[in-house]
Image (tube, rainbow, N blue to C red; front, side):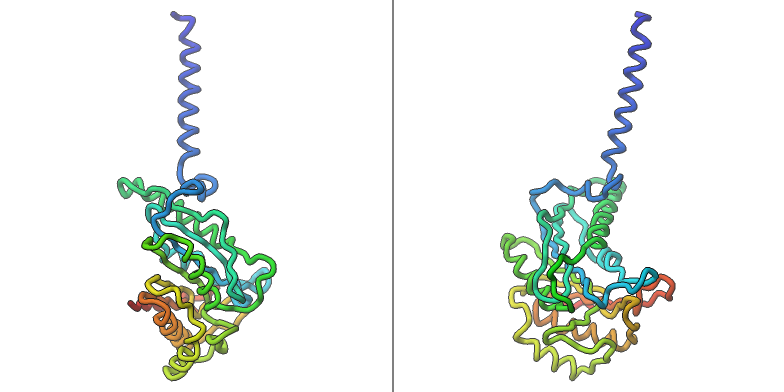
Length: 276
């Protein structure tokens, strides 16, 4: 009997070590936060198309430059629930979007709030990483075509089952450089200007988004490459996108951002506007 005690003790130590190691590997957020997401092909409860503005006005100038923090603005509005599906696509000019081959699908998030917390954080961390890393592929035209990106998002959503929940989230400074919504950066729009532009966009607005909630964040936020925009110009730009959005669908949320995302600048208060 005594000859087996050292062996039994060694096995117990090995087993304990293995158990601890396995628990560490399974902990959400350890290593790649996206490892917590459901496996490829998992059934989705809802689909969220996330459009990330990567046009020239949103890019930093030089190593000391700064860019809009799209990941933070989107992180505050994206739903984190069981089976939420996320398709993240950067855009610039044109109406072509390169969607990922495999969308991200949130895992089951259940149990007590303490059990849900690390899963929710891991999903948010995963989305932050993917939004931050969303880069344009070669061949995408230069410029900013926000309505073109929304057209492409609508086409993508038609491939998902009817009756399932569908939403669109857009992170952009709101300054289109092509099409009917093109305006000069920093210009303050009157109500008459907004009505004129919206009427002129009637033939260019996506027609397949009726009933799809649209959330637009970051309106007016600039990079170090561009001049900061006055708050009254940002407010009028947000009203323009509220008006355009309401002509596309029934539920719209438009958030204006701080004048700059420069970490050294004082934080500006953004505005939130919900239309339904």
